Image 1 (cartoon, rainbow, N blue to C red):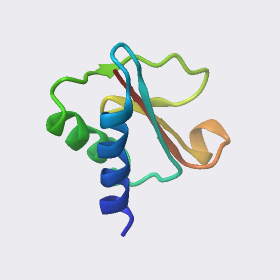
Image 2 (spheres, rainbow, N blue to C red; image 1 turned 90 degrees about the vertical axis):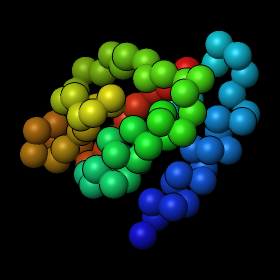
Image 3 (tube, helix red, strand yellow; image 1 turned 180 degrees about the vertical axis):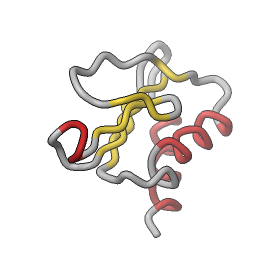
Image 4 (cartoon, rainbow, N blue to C red; image 1 turned 60 degrees about the vertical axis):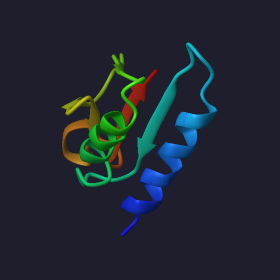
Amino acid sequence: RLAATQAHVLDIAATLVKPGGRIVYVVCSLLDEEGAGQFDGFLESHPDLAARPLSLPLGSERGKGMRLTPLSDGTDGFFIACAG
């Protein structure tokens, strides 16, 4: 239900990031609709931006970002990605 709001916030961020800057997208959800899928859609809508690699001590790759889970990482559920 929050996917439309998340997409809107990402679109606003794309207009505010300075050249050479980065957008870090973090959502406390394990749903791809709010995480990896949301970020993929954002990148498709903004071809001037590209996914940037992340270096995190926990998590596993999920799409163009990282997913942290209670079972695997001992954290709440998160999706984290970076674009610039």
